[in-house]
Image (cartoon, rainbow, N blue to C red; front, top):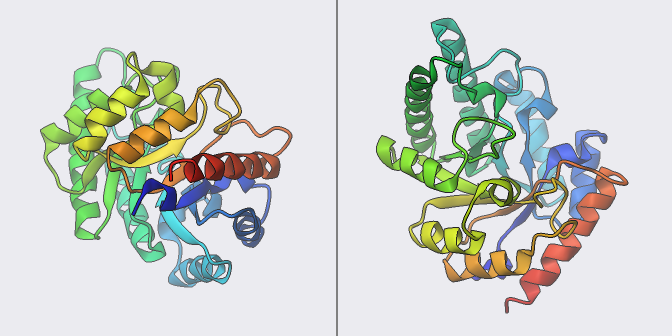
Length: 280
């Protein structure tokens, strides 16, 4: 399947001002194939959603011809989570939430969980080595748990203005390799990469994409707007992904919604569909 046939999903917090049913209706009408869901948009304790509530979410998506490609912003709710904390109780609670979200992803039919959550992986000054070790243990557990559920758990490199922990694709790939759990992978967020990486993204994609380490892609401009709303050229990025054999999903993840989320979502899907058609 060429890249032009890959699914394009919309990160649902872009339309969070709508009820979930309206989010689905709007995304489907615009031509998206699915949603990448931020669990906190489903409630304050998304890891504890009842089977009835999960079934309702699944039916709403299906009624609009959509799927859930992935979950992201995993540890925003409930509050107080951390994968690096020296407090065993905090870490145990964080693991329990992650386990619940992995189960939720499986129930919703998602293939990937994207671990961004910058605040919840921050390193404590003076205890950086301890924090990294505790994060590594967390990721090993999450990867094993995801693999057992038939999913992949993707470590997301984030820009340095968001976190001091795992900023580049090389760092994330090295961490994944050092852990060696089959369910643990990494991914590419073009906004963070555009702000942080030194070498061109096409080079990174050629190296990591061909090695199979990029399991998911989020498309956004370094200015934190949607693809096509800034200086980043996305045609070379898509061509590089295609050449590297990437056949996963493409998720639209802007953070600035002007004039509103509906307009941003509409602009992004039109821009990307046009670029993908040009690949053929």
